[in-house]
Image (cartoon, rainbow, N blue to C red; front, side, top):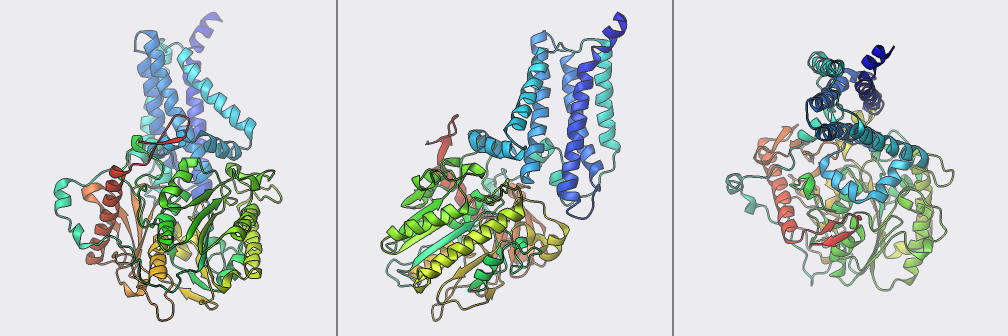
Length: 614
């Protein structure tokens, strides 16, 4: 019995690690199947591809453990074993992120995640089903690392033989399993391969820059301070609706009817049915809408990550445009302002007053994602703020209720549908209050989404919108000059709001090559998308860093950011001249961001998560 025990016990650690890895691989294969396969009507189609990619990673873990068996002294061998545990934890963190946000763990994001531990814990604990489950998962993760540090290296011949067999099996499976070409390969690749595949951090060489005629593309110029536009002196409210997507809305071409009150409001004025978010998450939505950024794609390695990277020191922003015309500017949200030092960034943009969930108005309110009170409270606070406002104002409201984990404040149910329907009802009530107080006698209301929902894109959405499904979001404007059912189906971007309001306030149209005016009025006609044959909207894919969707009047294409080799990998109907112009515009936007970051890099992130200026 003792001999048998002596033979079996050394095999247990390797067997446990093999079982753990196999369990994680099965979980990820199931997650990809549920998030991708089912949604594109091909359940189970990509299991073998996930196993192939992840067994290669498993081979790496077993190889590290096998290496530790030959390393001496023991303390160094145990440290080597702990590296294998860290690889497993990175794999597990990627699995959690994919489960919660339909996104992968990219190292360029990891530094910011670590800096915002409170917000990440909020999302993690709620997504894992509660505080107890989250704590158990963290204890298991800590136990894995401690166990590998305490475990004796596998010096026995039987243990080495098992690890060698596992390495061989992993490599054999990697080489022999069938690998299907897959449009969503970003989801199938293992986490390390996905990170190695990103090329967005590659910069242009000096030789390549010398050949680029960047001077032919004028930078945006602000409107004349002495000119008079059709909207000067009128109040403006901008509502940023978290995650509102075209597929939620019957009016905007979707297959659900979850937002009937928003749809009814949009039918009262001018709506945009080919409108695009510049990115995948709220931060990018704010950069596009408030800072006028056409694209957020900095040349950034993971260790360079800073909040709102390359978006500090922006001159032509939405609040700065209004302040130059004598407006007071305010930003109200029920979310946390300290998250990614957002409050500090909003003030850097030019907002005179910035307010978050810390305001006394929200005391005693129930809280949900990120500790945010529900949308109803935000709209009530907005009406309170308006009653004390003097002079013309720009008021921007940012909702939070429809963020993950999609909780309906009235029932507590976890459901995207119920959360969206709640947001729709509360917006309808807010619009009624604006009507009753006569806001539209001389006011303008803009309603726009920050990004498409962080949920899988099903086959039927691709059939309706094609590649626009990644970026297409609803947007509409209400005001006395807009009659019912006005529709603009030309391609626009969130970044067009800033030059549009520059024209609206000053009467001078934007001069940048890719800017357009969203709402020409009467005799005042700024350059709309139809006046600019080359007008395009950009969207950086958050789940595939380095890929940029380009949606133009002539069609759509897909660009890979890759330094000197930046190119269209899918050009659609775009001709060579148009492709060259868009690659040049993307280069100009990215290079301007890099120079801006060098002049004003913004805050670094301290270990406690707070920001500080360099």
